[in-house]
Amino acid sequence: MSELIRKNASELVQMLAKGEVSSVEVTQAHIDQISKVGDAVHSFLHLTTENALAVAKEVDRRRAAGESLPALAGVPIAVKDNLTTTDAPTTAGSKILEGWIAPYDATVVTKLRQEMMPILGKTNLDEFAMGSSTEFSAYGPSKNPWDLTRIPGGSGGGSSSVVSSFQSPLAIGSDTGGSIRFPGAVTGTVGIKPTYGAVSRYGLIALASSLDQVGPVARNVLDAALLQDVIGGYDPRDSTSLKDSLGSMVEAAKSGSLKGKKVGVIKQLSGAGFQQGVQNRFAEALKIITDAGAEIVEVDCPSFEYAIDAYYLILPAEASSNLAKFDSVRFGMRVTPEGNPTIERVMAATREAGFGPEVKRRIILGTYALSAGSFDKFYGAALKVRTLIQRDFDAAFAKADVLVSPTAPTTAFKFGEKVADPLAMYLNDIATIPANLAGIPGISVPIGLADEDNLPVGIQFLAPAHKDAALYEVGAALEGILEGIWGKRMMDFAPKLEGN
Amino acid sequence: MSDVTPDLVRHLANLARIELDESEVVRFTEQLGVILDSVAKISSAIDENTPSTSHPIPLANVFREDIIEPSLSQEQALSGAPDQGQGRFRVAAILDEE
Image (tube, rainbow over all chains, first blue to last red; front, top):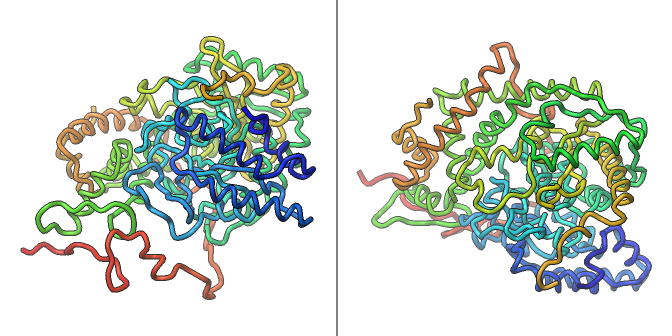
């Protein structure tokens, strides 16, 4: 395998700047890796490698001409297929959008193009980002490069598997209840859900608008910081976009430090219910964090017990109205029943044929939660729980600068293990959901392998809204110490994929 | 136990414009019952005085200047439509013949 594909984005930036390598060479090396392992891992739904090479060529031309270039110019990237692109289909993993080409680029995609990053393709996801495993993708699941019989996390398992199988150094994800952080944890990669509104949602196919957030997927913290600095910032096309600057994530990552930080361990998100190997790595990480000069405090978040329940009412309620737009009129599939059907029957037949089981389940659940007789008991109550969870965070952040927990209760599970049991599948998100309900940022950083299965474990840091930089600071510090102890990087533990 | 019945699932599916087949009705009746039984415990966490939060970040009255900006052309807006004609989306009959 080419050495180039194992380089971090920040290393590629330096090599490109020094002229040690061209962007065409870097991009071609990743395209070669896609040809080698792409079928086995099934990360991509659509490839745009020709366009990527054209961008790379233009970057090389401008560099040769001595023109100044953006920071990540020439570094390849992959984009989750729920962000619109004008040069490739956008399906959101659903049959109902098969073959649809959007008439506009998502703001994040526009920013990647302005940055002159070659976009390799669009990555797989659970249908409309509903799921934790990619098993609900209408186009088949992506595989975990650490063990091809296991899930790469979801919904952003395409992006996590792309980065962990060296098909791209960077990717874009979206996180509604953990869809960036959970895939990061189970593939030994880094994933960040920024503060709500820190990255534009314009052109993101909405799942639950009060929870959705676009963010970076990478193999290390500094790379993720480089990417957030590119995709973040105010966008007048997103009415929930934050106007104030959050500062430089790259500076925060470079200054990485734990010294003097108060780190709050969330009582409700450690211990019982978490796999032993996850608990062991988490305990070791806490010791490292203490040794690095941070102070560990315990924080109590009693309402987190209700977070999953509230989430699985709020999300379906919002999704049931967001997905009403897939009505066979303006875009996507149309199924016309026999006879002389009315438009309502066409809509119902189209949505029956176009949506998969999890999407139907959640739309129906959301329709119920919002209906007159059950509104107060379900959706109304969930909105109140959301207040309680925010209060728990307020109280916790009064005692601590950042909070920690394992990112997920288990390592990557096997295909088929949870697909028929919605409640078991929902439990994967127990540690990640509270951040979405409160709009705060979270990061998952790999902290080693579980003893019982040799699969990656992630730690999650959470910070108050707007304090994304704090996550990069502590995340980079912990990552640096761990790499020092291991004498290598997390992904160097991964088994070689066939074809490499 | 929840009171989710096949008729309720059919009614909800009709509201959501999804023409479920009978095997889905059976499956979703059971699964929705299990999910609703599980999530119903949230009512024990709150009382009538707990305020609601519908959105994580406080925002109000997000406006922009009322000036014309580039937007999609009619052709672009119609580009993904399953059927179109005379510059419009074409759909099946809105009303039954009866």
